[in-house]
Image 1: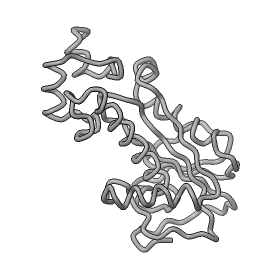
Image 2 (image 1 turned 60 degrees about the vertical axis):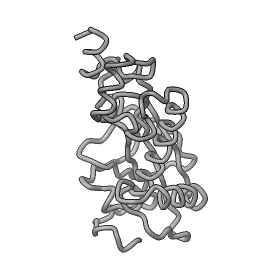
Image 3 (image 1 turned 180 degrees about the vertical axis):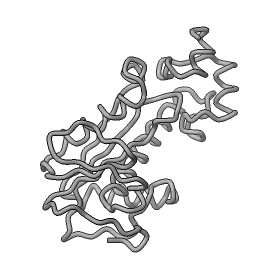
Image 4 (image 1 turned 45 degrees about the vertical axis):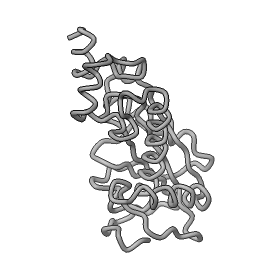
Length: 201
């Protein structure tokens, strides 16, 4: 395990998956989750919370995790689903999808944060898990790189919004672009700033 990670008491389980999400706060795009089962025979150096890594380091680890993990999977909920369910429920559904997509079924799941989705196996929430559990760190990196790349694609389509810079988060620049250009299809219509622009509040 990497020295950046704080100690965490692992449960007695033979196959542990770590789960994390990226994109609960943005006003646009999907919430993206990842589930990762690491291979003890193929350690990965430098795992930590994805937000503490440079973009270059995240991209390198992204490739290494996909190459070395026993199993990895991405889950997501699109803006329409977020608007129907609310962001918390949509995040739980996206986490369920990530775990269900694993090629190897874990017997224990560790989830970043303080809530766990309903899963067919035992699970535990770990506050600051992305700093304490290698599997969750790996999941946070896969989810963040995936979502950031999606924002860059959206930025190429709608350059006036600056998505590549703020990644869809509610920044001053994003609010100004919303005021000037209105909302696009990928905006979350149930989020207050978008509702206000659309006159739905």
